[in-house]
Length: 276
Image 1 (tube, rainbow, N blue to C red):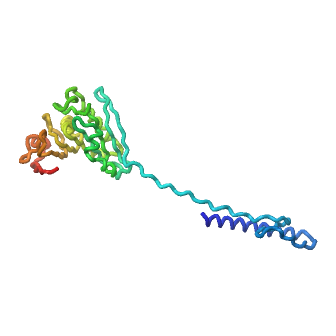
Image 2: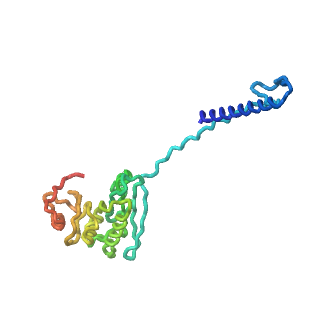
C-alpha cells in the first residue's frame, strides 16, 4: 500500500507541474511588457509561488492507510447434531443425527446405533466412543430413541415389549430416511445394537430381510425364531464372563449355528478369543 500511495502522489505532482508550465508559457506569449522582477519570497521554506504571485503551501501527501489485520478464521464444530421426529404407530418417535461438517467424501457410510435397555441416547453416545469417527468426517451417526429406553424385540424388553410398541416400523422408517439422505451411501448403512438394541437388530432383520446389508451386535442373541432371510454381514461380540449372554468358548452354540444356517454360510464359525 505504501508504494502505491507514493506513486499516486508523484503522478499528481507531475500533472500539476505540466499544467503550471503550460499556463506560464501561455501567459508569457500574450504579454509585450518586460517581465516583472520576481516577487520577494517571504513564505516559509518549502512554500512555492503561484503564477498569480500568491504564496501557497506545498501539497501534503495523503497519509498511508494502515491495513486492518485479517481476522484469523475460527474453526467451527466438527459435527452438527439434529433431532428428527417421526409419527409411527400413534406415537411420536425421534432419532438423533450427527453429521460431519467436513466429510471426507460426498457420500459417507452411516451407523444406526440402538442403545440397550434403561439407557438413553445421551448415555449411548458417551459409551460407544464413535464420536471421533464423525469428528474425522468418516461416517454419519444415527441414534434412534427407544420407547422409554427399551425396544420391543419380541419377548424382550419391557415396557416396549409389554406395550406392543411398533419398533420394527419405527426403525424401518428411520433406515429409509437415512438411506435417502444425499450425504449417505445407501449401500453402506450398518445397523448396530447393544444388548436389548442388539436383539432389536435381530428382530428387525428377521421382520424385513434385506433392510440392511451389515449388522454389528454386542452382547445379544436372537430371542425369537426367524425364517429364511437375505444374506447379511454380521459381526457378533460377546464376553466370556457375561452372566446374561455368555459366549460359547468351544463351539458356536445354538444361536450362532441357527443364524449361520439361515444365512446360508457354509464356513464354520470363528473361534472366540478372550479379551476386553
